[in-house]
Structures are given as structure tokens and as C-alpha cells.
Length: 313
Ligand code: ZN
Image 1 (cartoon, rainbow, N blue to C red):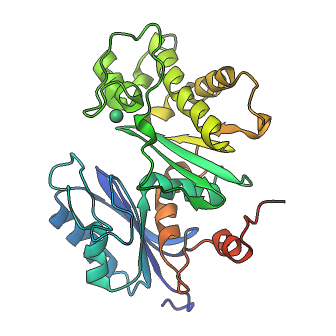
Image 2: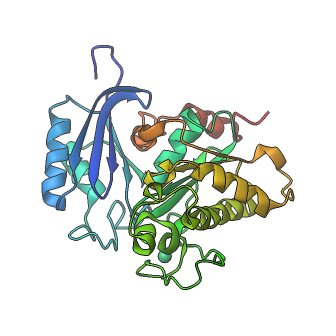
């Protein structure tokens, strides 16, 4: 507990290249944050734990993690990273390490679901009823919040692995996804761009065909998401999306693909992150279970008690 009497929460945004840590009283009241590079699991988790130990007594911990990660609470493997190609991390008991070390309730979801929750509640989603968060960087991933909750099925979604229609000037590239070749991630992630053109998208001239090709693939994910879920706001984040003009191109192309057909009309929006780089960390803090067992989210508690989303008017 802090001097103010409010419980102290811990948040971990667990990524492939760095872990971002924070303590705070809520997702919007971060007291201190810290970054450490991701190395092997034993070194990394020990260092993360040591940092939290020096910050006082946390009452709950939320983890927004790279995946794939087991999210089924009834599974003996809950909280484990599963079949990641990242050396040493497959089968790592990520949540279990912290549960054992700190003995506090742990909330866990994917990094993109965490970011989607944070953008929904505190960022570009205000005041929408639903939001998807897509990251385009080393890989492509997506999280979806419908009716105030992150969507899970048998596991978490893997939106980066859909198969887009090929661009007419990009028919020969085989794609780099080790599982599917020319899925969206295999065609439009940062490494897929480098594999074709040798540099990042932002390093190519504005009139280079690559901008057109990558935007055409990403717009198909937006179109598919709207077609399948009617989601209101789609946020595109990640390193590749910082390319000048890319979001506008994706927006334009998604609009052309939709051909003014969708009944949601102008309610469907494609946006940049409202929380800039902080969505993942805010999401991690939102995942920390509060004293009554609910995550740190006002609207979810209201939604639960009323059985409807508070933003529905
Ligand atoms: Zn794939």
C-alpha cells in the first residue's frame, strides 16, 4: 500500500526485445517505469523481479506478453509462453515465476489485447463501443475488444496470419512467415519489407511501389475485421506504421474495399494510437486484478453489473 492508501499495482509489457515495467495506482497513474533488454528467461525474469522488489509491496501484477501464450486458466500450462521461435523462451512459465515470487494475483493477456484494452479505455477508442489494435513491426498481431472485453476463443487471435489477395506487382515474393509463407505477416511485416527491398518502408521514396503494396495488404485486414466483427475503431501501431503517409493510404484503400457497403458507415474509423507508445504498458496495468477480482477497469465492472456496456446509449 502506498502512503495514499491506494494499492500499488505492477505492470509488465513483455516483448521480444525489451520488457517495460511500471508501478502505479492505476493505468493512468504510473509512478515509475523501467526498461530492461530481453535476454534468456532466467536472467530476464530475475532482473524484472528484482526491480519490482525494490519498489515496495505490489498488490497485483498485470502482464501483457508477446506470444503465443497460454491464456486458458484451466490449463496446467496457463501463463506459459508456448511455441515461440525465440531461443530459450518456449515453455517458459512467465506468469508462474511472478506468482511464486510475489504471491499476488496475476492478470495476463497478449501484448496486443493489452494495448487494445488501453486504447479502448484511455486512447483512440473513446467513446467507441469496440476497438481493434493492430501492430505492424517485427511481426503483425492484433487484439480485439468487443463490448468492453478482449476477445479470446480457444486461444488468442492471430490476426497477422490471414491470407490477403496478392497485389498485382507483388506476385512472385514467397513471403517470410515460417508457418504460412505469404500470410499478412509474411508479406507486410518489417522483415518482409526488408526481404524485398533491402531497407525499411520509411527509407524508400514516397513514390515507391512498396508503399502501395504494403498499404493494400494492411487495408485488407482492416476490411476483414470490419466485415467479420463490425468493429468501430481500428488502431494501427508499431514501427512500420510510423512510415509517413502509410496510415492514410491504409485508410483510403480500406474505404475503397468497403465500397460504402458496411451498415456502420462513417462509424468505422482507422486511427493511430491515442496513447502513442504507452498502450502496452497501460494495458498491462489494466490487466492487474483488483481486490474484488476484476481488472482495473471501471467500464468492465459497470458492464458486468449491468450486463451491458456503459457506452451503449
Ligand atoms: Zn503466418
